[in-house]
Picture 1 (tube, rainbow, N blue to C red):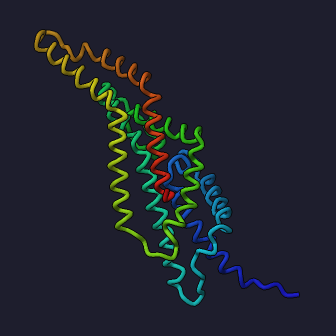
Picture 2 (tube, rainbow, N blue to C red):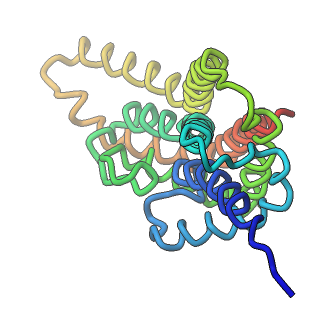
Picture 3 (tube, rainbow, N blue to C red):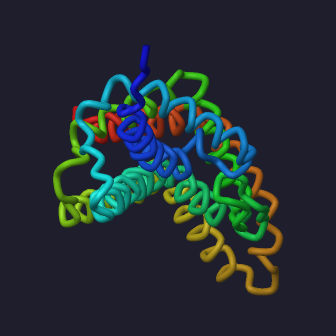
Length: 257
């Protein structure tokens, strides 16, 4: 009895193509691809998730041609590029929390309170921005929205087929729209603090004109911080609910829904 291994090259080639897209997307995806998660765990998860996707999408992948090197390199580059595009767009979606935190920190007088943001690969950022970003990731897991992220990875094969050319112009348009909408959501989340800052500093300016001998801004700084923290406590639920709605709608967009 002879056992043929003719299927092995095509199987390995298909698995590598799946891993190229899945691994690249998971490297950039929010929640799952954060730098705080050990690289070995992320790599093991990407390998296992690629194995789960293999029987679902193997038939849609290009065929392996041992005599043509470009038939291997071109599809592999295509899948890595798709992973970078979709993963980068997903990273832009969750940047709204960091934008809102930076605006809130500036209006509350806490812009100098900075730390290494674990959700931004250790980049220095406002403390409130780091808090909102980390809270947003926690809520993504708490609301089971990470399943939506995994579903978006699977559905990406119906939107970006491995056998069709890259839609770079469309991807650029989506990235620009996502950036603009993330900035808009961040400003809307911090809108009460912008109004508070305008009213508070306008009042301080008038008070400084009436009592020029008093350092009004220096004296009023504790009140600015206290009111900012109080507003943060009162409005946090509303802000994060808005943020989760924004994230869910845009991940549904990535799924093609």
